[in-house]
Image (cartoon, rainbow, N blue to C red):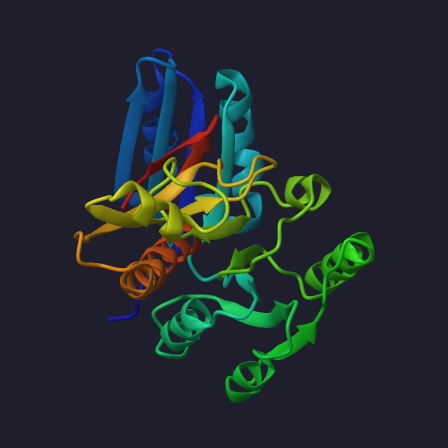
Length: 286
């Protein structure tokens, strides 16, 4: 059977009476066949969050008019919302430095069809990844960054991203701190992998920090980048056991496996419109 084209509605707003009934009524009145529906209320924050996905075949409102048809409801309840369609392919750029394990993993998953996206660009502050990009037929740009060139290179990045119509940027162990201006240009559209179980061991050399503290587990965290380093909303995390017998090199080796899986999972959740951000938190409808 052919996979149906679906619409995905993501909603967040202040919790109030009538939200679920009103959204359900909108879909019912227009003949919407709901495929997935999930919701969550954060009672401490007083926030309602919902994800609804429905088959658009036979829906009374065509896809070009759905945004305007739903807008009065969104305005009535003060919603922050988005509407996407399953046959729209997001465009993803990958930033990388000298460690390529996450890059290889993402590209392999993409080639196997596990990540539903186009990858028009790979950008790096080193040239090492150029042959990898060539192997996968992806355009590569070497943009070395120093204190003197940072502003110009970030401006170049913006031109490349906007020119390629990029929807999301993935930092696959890109070991440069992006400026506040760059990050705020792409809110909740830059996904980073940090090699620790945040909020523990933020910043540089987290495996060294973990080893010094004698931890019994190490972790990796996939999160959205914000102006505060390694403090953005968390999408996905994973852990692995370690012991007193493990050296720093052992922690790094074990951690790389975690980083690949956690980053791929975070990217996949984002691409399938299953993440809702509110404040510095997320709800992940997996």
